Image 1: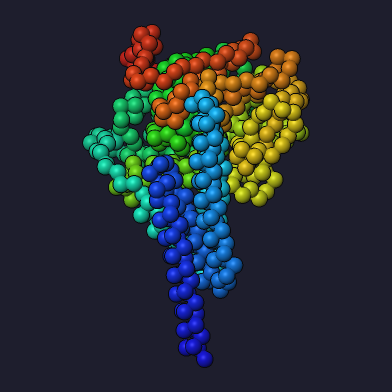
Image 2: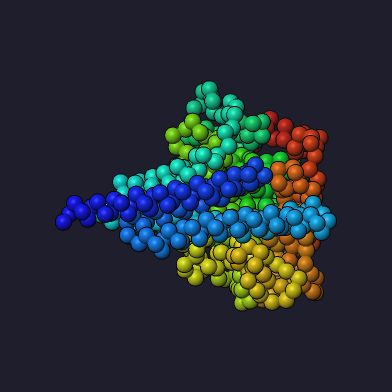
Length: 530
């Protein structure tokens, strides 16, 4: 009795594998011509194949062939439709003779929907892979490692044929051949301003931290971020508060910001708030994050890092940051540990900063009756458990998703965010009521490209919601938008500062700033931010 049953099962498994392979091959072959048109689209084919394969793994466990094969085919067809929608968006925008920025916005809208759904699929893949593992190992460390390797094995198997081969160039690490060796966590806990200047200069010159030093930086940064409240009330002692919008891996724009603001003014008369979306889409996300975390460690009270929707373990997997780490540390054994450590740093980021006149958060208002105290109820431990806002389950996860993903519009009320398929659209009336409730004048947020680097929607009585976007010529120097940041003065005025992308060396110092930086180095100002 046992042998015939085993044979039947093997036949079913063999047939299922053939179905999965044939359907996945047919889908990828049909779409290969698209891969040359957009570097990102190989991931769609890969996720489609991964969905099919993961479904197959699940089917073999649950013995429910028909429904899950149909589901996997539906998933692949859905991904193809999303990609086709991207092409349609481009054609529609081009035929209407819209500006380049508008065309990019149209593409971005479709891209956002596609990527969010991709992250949802990755979330489902993770759950399917977990379900395929034996229950008896679920509580052991070996079981965790086994489940982790299952997810990685499934994705890597399908991704491999579609990855572009790149020619690797030798890149010097900050600590290569250095007498001091790897910088440990204790080094970062007592790091000085002069040391941060030196390390930033090295990074700007094309060097990067070796993997061990980077992991120690991430551990120290996570501890520092965990000391921040989820809702930060900024003291009124700074003469100006600078709000920086989305950087999206643009090291050149970050250098522009730091040159214009002046690193040496931070902690004296300036507090600088980076409003999320530090990674993805740009090619220097690792360098941007390294510099921001170094600044946070040396100016813990005057450099504020807020979470954006891309500071998310699944979104960063879908949008390219994980691939960037894998590429830049390809010869290291701890690549997965680095990405996991970044995930913990992302989760530790606070959600909102409040000044005397403004609330600063990444996306915006998740509901009519949203109150800042709602953020204050999220404890440090609770926020550090929210590694992703994809598929939120608890009320607080839903709240965080709304804060990070929502967008303002010029029409009144609250409505579903049909552009992103996540979050809501909120009108000027909703913003006005929110600002009135909290005796504030401005809502400052990022999350969207703005042609002038900033864009304001008036809410009446001198109140407004202002979007700031700091990645000039987005993406990666190919666009036409300005980069900008916002200055909030002590008297309450809001002043945007913008710049255009240039082909000169980014962040060229002014004579005054250069002299100030040289003086700071020579006098060895090693006092940390109080």
